[in-house]
Length: 392
Image 1 (cartoon, rainbow, N blue to C red):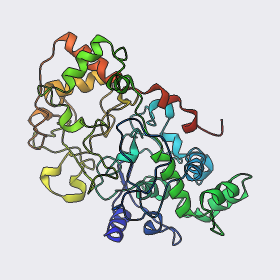
Image 2 (image 1 turned 45 degrees about the vertical axis):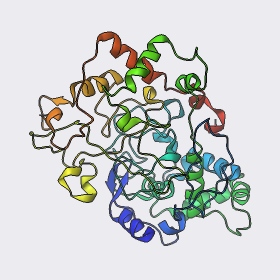
Image 3 (image 1 turned 120 degrees about the horizontal axis):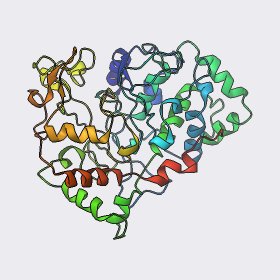
Image 4 (image 1 turned 45 degrees about the horizontal axis):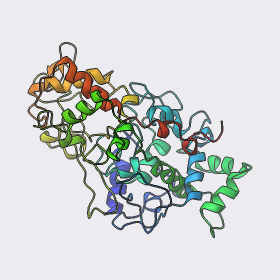
C-alpha cells in the first residue's frame, strides 16, 4: 500500500498544493524516507499542551531532541536549495505561524506556485498534507515534493542531490549533528535522513497556548467578554463552524496516535461556482484532481484555525484577503464572484458542504466572532526561540 502511494505521489505530486513532477534520485526512495504509520509512537520527548494527544509517528522514525534540532537547522538552511538562495523557511515564517503572508509563494528560481502556503501550526496532527492530496499522508512524503519537484521548482534539488550532500558534509557542525541524530550510521548525511530530520522538526511545531486555551484551563481573565461571546457563537449550531473546525486542533481533519485510522476530510466551501455548474477554476479543482468524481470538485482539507489571525491571505489560492472577508463569505453561504473568468455564485454550488448554509449576524456578533478567532493566536509559539532560525 505504501509503495502504491509513493508511486502515486511521484506521478501526481502536489507542492504546497501545486501539481508537479517529482524526479527522485535512485538513492532517495519514498519508501526509505517514509515508513508505515499504523502504530503508536513509543515516546514523545517534548511537552504537549494540556489535552493534546500524542502525534502519530512512523514506527521506523522515532523522534528525538537531536533529530528535531538537526531538522531545525536544515529547515532554515538556504544551502538545501540547489542555487543556495532559499530554505524551507522561505515560505514559512515563524511570526506568521509558518505561513508567508503572500497570495502564493515563489520557489528558489522564481517559479510562482499555484496555491497558498499553508501555516504549519500543529502539522504533526494532519492526516494528509498540502491542500487536497489524499496520497500525501506523512510529512516524510510531503517534504519530497518541495525538495525534488520540478514543475514548479521550489528548492530545485533534483539533479543536485550529491552536490548538496557534499555542502552539508563540508560544514563545520553538520557531521556531528547528523551523527548525534543517527547514531551508529557510518555515513548519516543522506537524503532519507535529511527528510526524516526536517519532518521531525515540523512535528515539533505544536501550538496550544492561546488565550482560548488558557481560558479553557481555568483562567477566567484570559478572554474578554467579547471573545467569550464569540466563543459561544463559534460553537453554536446556528453558525455550524465546529462541523469542519471542531476538536482540540480546530479542524476535524486530524490524526494522532490514539486513533485507529487516519481521518482524512475534504470540503467544498462555496468559494467558486464557475458558470453556475459547480466547477472550480481549471487546474485548481481540489480533491477532484485525484478522484475525478464530480462530487469532489472544489473539496479541500479544512486547515486548523489556531493562529488563523496571522496566516492571511486565506483559502487554497490566497484569494480571500482578510478574516473579515472570510466571515462575510460564510455569512453569505458562499462567495459571489461577479465578473471575470471565474464568475459565479458559490452559494448555489451543487457540491458545496451542507454546513455552509449561511447565517445572519449583528455588527456586535460579527465583532465578537472575529475577536474569538483572533484569541486563538498563540504568541509564545510565534516567538519560541527553540523553533526560530538558528543562523540568526
